[in-house]
Image 1 (tube, rainbow, N blue to C red):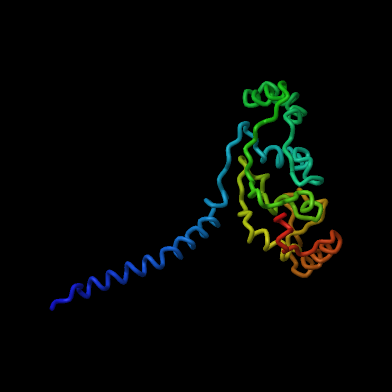
Image 2 (spheres, one colour):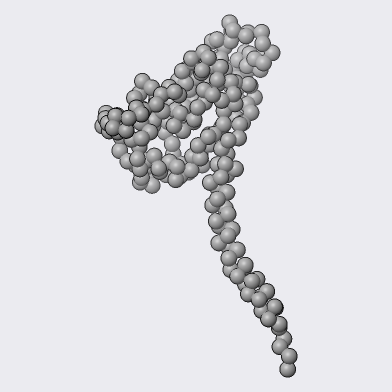
Length: 219
């Protein structure tokens, strides 16, 4: 009696079974890779705003400190965005007839805020306090990158749990003197010994400790 299935059919059946068995693992790995990619973390995607605002000009050319606009960053969980009236502190005298700033003037005169699009967004189950990080010596550039070189702000760090934990396990390497907290160009000493000494002294001065408990970020 002839066999119901040929050797080729058996091989195909084995391949199908192996594919079905491996599909869930491949799917899980694919989703994990996607979540960590620039697509999943929204990195490197400039986000257009309702009003053109070039950080290069305001920060690098004019030397405006981050805290002038984000004035709650040292005392609140939120960095804050400036009220529209603050824009007119300068632009009531400078470019006060510019068509590009017409929306700003209209919003200010109606006591309304500019509807900025949020660039850096954490999940709702993650607690993040700007003031704690800034007052402990973590500079703006550590998380936000060289904003002073961005014509349109974009997210440059992944902001994933693993990325945050890397810093929480070894915070010393990301600390800087508070007088340089908003200085995008500041760099630690190139000499490894001096760099390590500075890191240790800042850890002690600002009383920084490793934080890896779940309740640190999930409350």
